[in-house]
Length: 314
Image 1: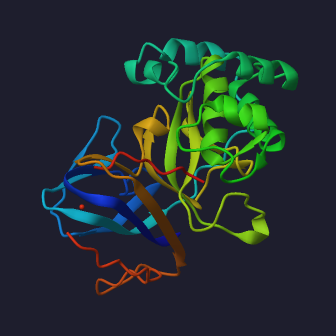
Image 2: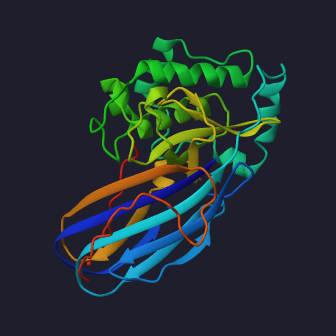
């Protein structure tokens, strides 16, 4: 499957600021199941971005704007190819739990069972686990599939009940939230079972007939759990899905704090407002002649503008 993605982020500031330094995580990943064929970044006021990859393979772009400004806009355009993941088995062998425990000698996997800022145990989480009768099953895969559905059924999808920095207790107490909350809750439960688990930031190609609960025109979040012989398997508790070729992966980390689309600082005292728009379209074939065929989003023509705001994933 080929997709074109246009992701526009625009900031407005109450006062003039200077010396913005910002990093972006907007370029989709390339791996066995996904390839970022084309990526283009436009920044207004104009700035030159440099890029590198972190230890998890995420592409990070950084730029600075030293001049005075009150507006900032970033538009990222991507063309991505996704592939069907191999079908999952109906279950795993009886020694799968022991094989996961043995694999934790790998430092990278061990990091993904440790508590993190947004994915950690708490009395509210313990109460939720007890109320839903959540426990290890006969094998890790069937346990994760059941947990994915349990979280899907336990919470209503309601935007604006939680904020970008809400702890999982808010969604647990309200019984509602968005994909960021559901991913964090499931990660915390899965890590408690000693299964390596990581947060995924990206996009979902929305199809109304699939009854997707996540919002169209927004970023999305889910999680990946590491399983012997299968590697990293994606689970989307917002929509009760095993992740497939409609999920476009941008960045992975311990939780959302590791992978916000934008993060930065500036010099000055100002309040900021944020607008985010995402357009995702399916392509019948790979575009040619430099055309992405992505839906157009007008890039605001802002004047010459810190910002330390993160946008919630829906």
